[in-house]
Image (tube, rainbow, N blue to C red):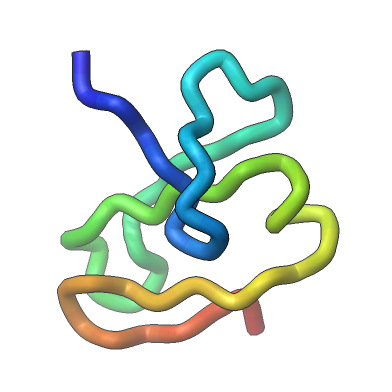
Length: 56
């Protein structure tokens, strides 16, 4: 099983309630992974495939 890490803070999010993962809203290629804390504070993330930065 692959370990998931938050794109913003690099924290491992395995079994982290409130964490999420989704495809990049711009290109749909890369997986964006967010921990609960980074989602709540609106921390920036960057797509590794196209360079898109969010949240907007």
